[in-house]
Amino acid sequence: MSADESEGMPQAMSYYAGIDPGQAGAIVLLDATSRIAEIMDWPPGEAESGILAIHEWLRYGPLLDRLEYAVIERGQVRPAREGERGQGVVSAYTFGVRVGEWRGLIVGLRTRLEMVAPQSWQAAILKGQPKTAKVKDRAWLYACQRWGIDRFSGPRGAKLYGRSDAACMAELARRRCGSGA
Image 1 (cartoon, rainbow, N blue to C red):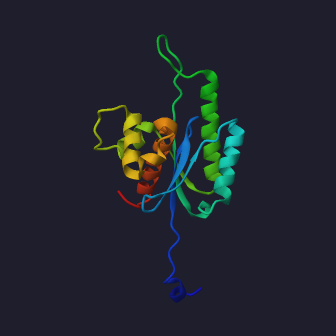
Image 2: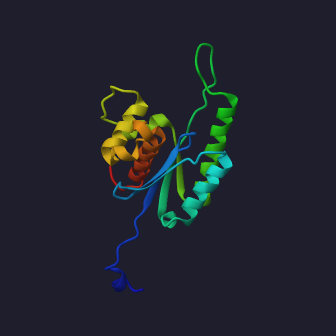
């Protein structure tokens, strides 16, 4: 196709992924205009079946070849200390496996990837937000105000923190690629 023929055709849109790798996590894909293109919650069941389901969704989905950049939350395992609640050995191991699966999947798709600490994406995205609530509630509220409460609420109004965190990280990915501030 010549340059003249392609002038009237719409340009292929790029997409940006935010990934919360936790047990109740999700992946959110935003387009270059910050509209949500896709949301997928982590499938219930064993980790292996979850990553396979997500791989199939991304691999055969129409957005695969246009996924430009992904941000995955780099979590930290907190062992229990006396008088505090931490993570058990099994949950810490499972989280580490899931982060590795996400990294492998995104790298295997030849998509640029950044691992971001929670404090980093929260500072960038929630800058200027009132600090009247816990950070996870502030991120949820930001996502609801920006993209609509129906996307981040479950049955009986349950807050879907994995989705809201993933949406905020997708926005960070979009901004880091120069598609908006």
